[in-house]
Image (cartoon, rainbow, N blue to C red):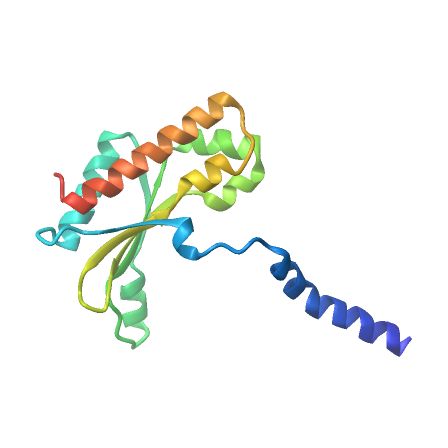
Length: 163
C-alpha cells in the first residue's frame, strides 16, 4: 500500500513537468505586441490618447490596475506599471457563449510599462494567436478581428499620443 501511495504522489508531482515538457516551445515575445511610446509623448499622454481612441472605437474601459502604486503601498520602489482593460461586452459575451475558454482572455489588456531607462512601452497580447488558434463561426471570427483591430488602433494612438 505504501508503494502505491509513493507512486501516486510521484505521478502527481511530476505530471505537470512532463505535461509542460510536451507543450510546444514558444517565446513570450511571440505572444505579445510591444511598442515603444514616442519620445515626445509622456506616459500620461499615451494613456489619455488610448482612452480617447477606445471611446471613439466603442471599446469600454472596464478596469484600471495601478500595479506600481500597489507595489509602492507595500513599501517597495517600482517603475510605473499600469494595466488598462478594454472590452466590447457584447462580443465578449458571444465568445464565451461559443467557447467558455475564451473567458480566460477577457477583458483585453494594454499594459503601460516604464523600462529601466525611463522609456514608456505599451504591451498587449497578440490576439492573432487566439483568433487563428481556435475554431469559431465566421461571424464570431469577424467580431474578434474587429476587436483586435480596435485594440491595435488604441495601442497605436497611445504610442503616437494621438488626441
